[in-house]
Image (tube, rainbow, N blue to C red):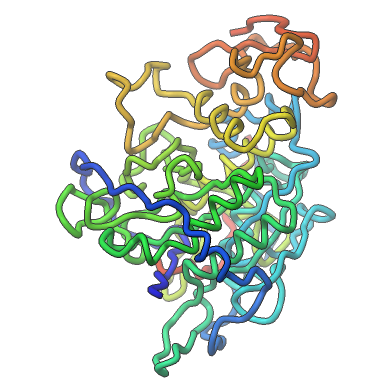
Length: 462
């Protein structure tokens, strides 16, 4: 069976692209195949012929620098206001990636989910990518820096599923750089589901020709549906143009992203996945964020700050292998974990909602620029429903969830009215939301892989 190589979606210094053309209709994914699901092995196992190719990630500098102040992304999303409802306690977010390092700001909440690359551990991150992703989801606060994860009380289940630091040997003897494919990703999804994840973050994408996408992606399609049926929310990066085989489609055959020649998985799987594009500081969709009818919503993905994969601090730049200078952390890889963190907040706040209801709440509460709906109800292939909004996601009262006493099964820790005494409304964008407690509505307040050496940059406190 064709096993498309995954792209770990981080910054690779690719040039900016021209604005994409209007996409055409994408092919519809086939129904899940039970036989493909039954053939998967969810127990960790090494890739065939795996061998080390380059050294693991290391830190640059003496580690004495600090990044003071909250990054623009968390200021924009205002998830500290969402913490007045919940901080994600009781939720387990599986980060299926390059592994997650034992960072002190994840201490006590980091669980080893296994290694599908070698024979070591999910707590080994040779590439550095998975640690950056996990930090955005759940890094604990630290008085030395303003950076903190979206759901700092959530657990991280670390599953090492891909790495660009290895080579693999195929049955015919050919050797390829990098390891991890759609079949091992499917197995990792099954493992995360069986280990009790409530959210799965996949900051990876497989861009494959549409003509053979059904058979090639059958195991992953089946695994994702099985996860959702088991009440797990799956969040996936929409993909970056210029990473691996992924290209921004222009509507012509074989041209990439959203065109008829190529599909992006697992984002392609429609209502089974929250697919995330990325926006820049100016609020506009990034040119490299793949467009497509499968994009559910967007989140910040440029000028990112997260945990140092090889040290105790935080970083805002990386040096890709083969490069001589650091570049900012950017990509849909780092937009997806913002959404995963918000999903963890919603699941903690509303434990009575199932996976699809949570997905609907997160997309329905997204903030479209200016508060305007899509023209004519049309789907926005760049940002989907808009930018994820943590405050609205946990605070909105939705009539279809109202039981007569409050939003469905509000957790006791999140019950009650929230008083935003700083004068702002409860929404980080332009809409007003209803704040509700358990007694009812209370008030209206208005590359084929990223291998990085990590570089710290000093920043003055604000």
